[in-house]
Length: 559
Ligand code: HEM
Ligand SMILES: [Cu+2]
Image (cartoon, helix red, strand yellow):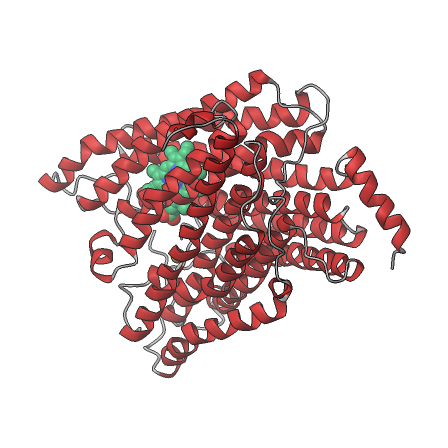
């Protein structure tokens, strides 16, 4: 138990000298791994794009499905998890006056577990023993070591989640009656979702491991898929919550403005945490054995996410307009000229927000039963998530990296690096427009996802896809250039940029802001509500899958 005086001293020290060296090292290491994953995943993405366009033939020892599995694991698991943890741990350290030593230790143990788990998962992929994609749906069965790796990754993430809870709880005890600083509030929401959302996938993996070893004969396929998406869908909203934390808190500061309503911001976090998990069946709209009513509940819950999203859109544009007018912006729309378009810390998240408009609209399309039949398992879906996670989320992360990395490494963002960042953002945007646009269109033309290049015996329909597949190759090439520039920027800002202080940009609320009610801090309540909704969404279908179980399936190696 620390006494009060050294803590306040530490807090003051943090303000004066920035983040402590040890906390900075932790976050920097997490971010470094995230961007190496981007580099490797990007190379694999380009290989896929070229191979699907029929331009490149992959060797038999590293086939399309190995590449696809590794691309998915590296980008949606490694990159996002490591970035999220690196970013929020920096935020916890900065806003709560430093990490507790025990918390720092937990985050390092979590780091080690995740890296060891990753090695366990990747080796079977490289040996062609785990070409099951990142969704690893049974009855496809990988080498058991692949799943053991996943368990280690999950436990590693739990270490970080509990570390965050301990740090926040400690701060609250020392600051009774006060609101947790807003970024730490976001972090709490994210780690609550990470912890509860990964319980179902942990259960799934524990069912799969004995089956993949051959100790149990069969597996209940529907239970596995359902447990997977209870997690997978939550993961999506964890990225989303991480991205909007920067939109609400960082972007207003970067443009020289104030935050939108603190109450509204906290309500958005709470609502997302409560309503997110029971939406998973929108990934299983065409799956059999799920009552229509249950699918309807999930469709309703997924569409409800649109509500906080619209609140976010409203809040952001209000901040933009208000700040620009303060700086002399005139007319109905003329104020947009007063925004700092030449500042990569603004441009990248701004394009991310704009991309979220078509991305969210596509999501609403897919959650609709009839339209889902049209796009299910086509390249449309791939186009959709390259817009959501591959643009909205990732561009926000890129934008964060231009101040967070120099902040952590006590260096500065030079005008030259800023310009490189602007170029990177534009290349990424154009590349994604090509690639994701073509994918959406190809999906409507019936081109399947997760399928290596084939002309289906020169079928006319399949040959008709060829010109659009070229756009995937062109877009993919641009994106690869973008990846290289981005990784260069991060390495430069981490190790080579000129020394100096870089601020951690956190916007204040308006001076005349009304006081946020204290009930927003009652996390216990929100978690109980969340669990009630999870029960509403999942108890009936899971009981039905188990009570009326179809014959289970033995493991299959389909590749
Ligand atoms: C250089 C940039 C990138 C390129 C060229 C690229 C390209 C591709 C291609 C061609 C596919 C396979 C389509 C299929 O056969 O189904 C794919 C799948 C995928 N990509 Fe990317 N991508 C890139 C970046 C990203 C990023 C940044 C993310 C996420 C953060 C991402 C996440 C995914 C996921 C989750 C899949 C699906 C894997 C699966 O179906 O199992 N990609 N990508
Ligand atoms: Cu989802």
